[in-house]
Image (cartoon, rainbow, N blue to C red; front, side, top):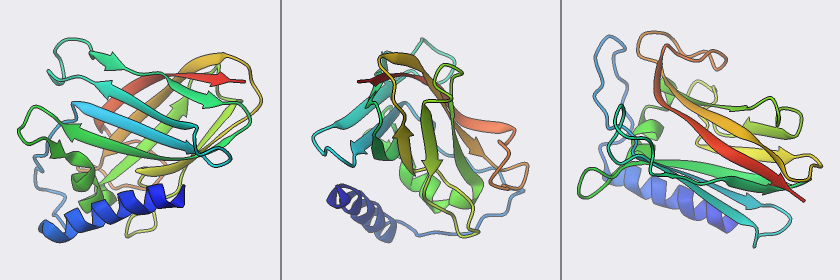
Length: 189
């Protein structure tokens, strides 16, 4: 299980080394970056590595077009702990753009927020485990703990806040969101 995350970290690090690296940006400048057409949430059960969940959200025509063509359900075992990552891509370009790297490069300007629907609020705990250079949450990596439940359905709202017009404080969402997705979730026995 740790090999899974170590491999993702190694890939991300090697991509960072081969790119221009982490740079500070002036908050007054506009930062053009790609929009996400594909979001992948991967979770690995810490007690059962064969229980790996990979859920895809796909909207290839981008914001404002047709509804997403793929929204996989995140199916989690009851009373379990998962380690997770989220990846974002723009697949309208060839080759596709790995937006995850852009978020990591400018992590002090980005933060994910994971909010369960009211039907899951008491059954799921989604906690961010990675931090930016200011020791504030990013949300590319997280732990998910489920409580005992049997076929409990709901949603997890995933928002990626982009802090251009306000300062990131680790608590409040920004006025600008790069993604705002409702993933269906089921907690199974």
